[in-house]
Length: 122
Image: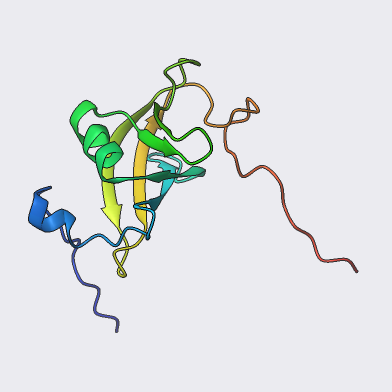
């Protein structure tokens, strides 16, 4: 018989954000999942400010490592991600963001960025 612990919910305060482990460059991976289908849609990076902005506006906001700027998912495409919940893993170093996706998540116009599979040669 397994003993499953209940979900821990925290209020976002400066003290609680200190629990999160951002990398040396101030980033934390954020996995984005459809809240209904549970399909993984994409993965991007957040810093503390983009996480705060995400929580404030209720839409995903990320840090672009290549462009060195913030971006709100859907701002140019209209394919917004409306945040339903934000969780973090047991090591406090990865976020899981459940969203209601409008349109597609991938810039290739696919529903998910994870549309390619690796198959072992037989």
